[in-house]
Image 1 (tube, rainbow, N blue to C red):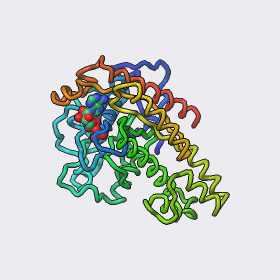
Image 2 (cartoon, protein in one colour):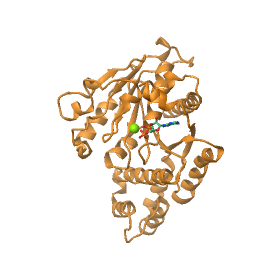
Image 3 (cartoon, rainbow, N blue to C red):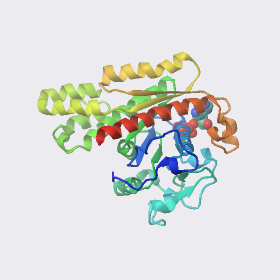
Image 4 (cartoon, helix red, strand yellow):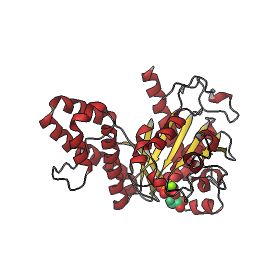
Length: 331
Ligand SMILES: Nc1ncnc2c1ncn2[C@@H]1O[C@H](COP(=O)(O)OP(=O)(O)O)[C@@H](O)[C@H]1O
Ligand SMILES: [Mg+2]
């Protein structure tokens, strides 16, 4: 990603911010919200993170990349804009920037998702690349990607491209299962992008294929198998696992048991996959959400003092702190 030194200090913006020092974000950051399943709260989380960052004074762009079921504009209370992602994909908008619309909220801009009429799920690799290149060149503090359900190649590509990848899951078995599937798929597809793992490509592909005769079921087993074949690469693979730290949010919790699902997923991911999940926290089930959806108002605009607002604030502050630490380390 390009270094962008021209970003404004958030303190100069009208909303002000809780940060007193010079903006630590010299580079735009991309955060992606994924998760295996539809209806787990990806759009609620993306729109709420974006809304909160914008309110803090950060220039924020939220992009609907749910190519199969775009509805972020509705969650943000916007009517479908004149230009959206489809226009960039079919060439009627020459640049992705042409599809940006200002929302009714200060510092918050949006790119609405694709219209249904396009065969969007068959989007070419070149188009994905052109979206990623264009996103990297946006002039915002934060770009938030609201991803689609499932583990299609393009969704994993967007997820892996982001500086921060957050997986959303509900505290129920099907959603948890899908989240694990997403974590594994995202890890394997990262490995496929690394040229030095070319030598174990057949093993990675075997791990990605259900019921493959090699029977590699997890990143941990991939490591064991690689160690047999190529111990030097196994060392590198161990490092790759260490550097992969997807984040997890459990949504619609109703009890402490639901909240604890995040902790058990963290230990399962470590024990069976060797992957360190970063459990960011939970968002309680909030009965008022449907009312805000019906009124076409973001939940945080309609209920700024709701429990959801408290949970989102906590998650945002944690991520900002982490982003600043990582930025300092990279200097
Ligand atoms: N914490 C929550 N409390 C109550 N309803 C929620 C909560 N999170 C999501 N919902 C509702 O669940 C539905 C799916 O959420 P959404 O964000 O659209 O999921 P996704 O983008 O993953 O498909 C929406 O109707 C949304 O309003
Ligand atoms: Mg959605």
